[in-house]
Image (cartoon, rainbow, N blue to C red; front, side):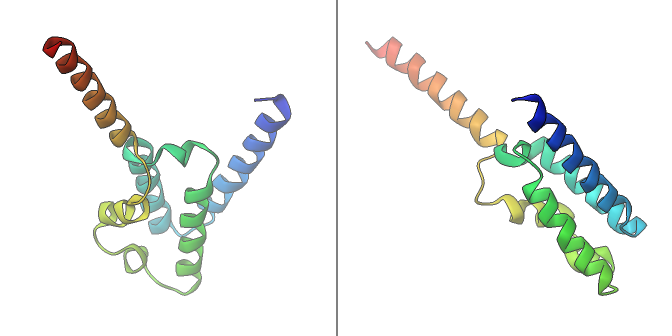
Length: 113
């Protein structure tokens, strides 16, 4: 990655963080929990820019502008909300499961030959 892309990425991230800070407090709390959740279990492509996080932020901005509470927007089960967002995405857990399966398959094949 060249220096210009890194600088641009940092500028985009700072703008994103500023938008988060402009949300009402309850939205900020839930957004940060969603962010942590997605960083732990989320899609592999989450690290490729702020696409999904930016979409969530826009969704939250719309909800706040409409005067809705954050749990009216996400539902009371925030983890289920997150899971719904990433249900069709490859996650780190998926990659780990594939790796384990491949390792086991190789070991079994070696022993059977």
